Length: 296
Image 1 (cartoon, rainbow, N blue to C red):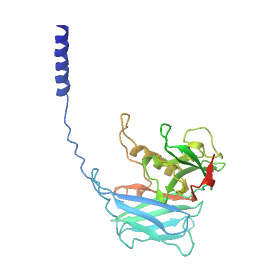
Image 2 (image 1 turned 30 degrees about the horizontal axis):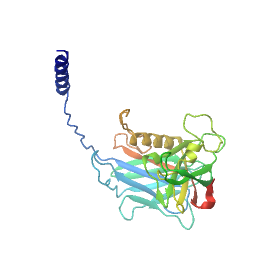
Image 3 (image 1 turned 180 degrees about the vertical axis):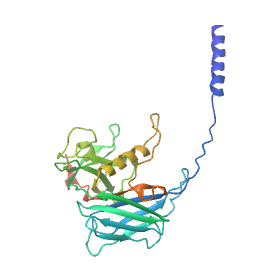
Image 4 (image 1 turned 90 degrees about the vertical axis):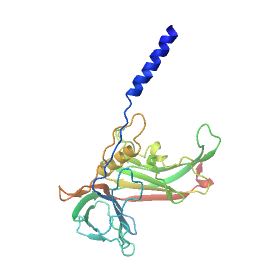
């Protein structure tokens, strides 16, 4: 009798749970397309590029529509003006220097102006200082503790500037290919994490020094390039929130939210924009995985 009662209760519980199930047909209507700006200007020689596209529907996996026909101008705080043009109408607006001239200068502030489809958008960013990368070394390690397969783990060294608070982004390349997984968005405040102990003026802490490794580590004769970029605090916050949003999932996911932008429509009632404009000083160091570079 006891077992029969348990069986009946189980069936009733299943029916109750099934009756609570509601099918929701989520309809994410596509609103007006917004201008999307991807622009990082540097102090490095060569052409500088700002990419303009338009936003698309939530479930649209195709390439974003190109924002052609815009007028794109950058002005610095000394009065110099740089006109960016899109000769191929592919959304890539480029300024090309003469000889070895560079656009970016540390300490200057750059103002972006975009006129597109009757709207004018502006943004500004200061180019902050960035330290040199002193060296890159390698150690032979197992790919993971349970694997017999070995590779070469890279570690770079750089020291934060003393005084004031500095923000950086680290990028790295393996055999000329940029590492661009969500986990490869690497940002620092001074020499460590945001909210950590005071690390002003110190060598970057080890988790960041070793953040330049792919999952499979490196192999002998691989080329490795590390790039260190300066950020404003606003750009640092942008990359922090961008990283959180694209890795936001699982049991403890938070509701999705818009990532902040510094692209402002001069008409408060006009269409808003997305993306971010950054002026960044860059220092790089490249090497190869060789036996002489391996530390025992």
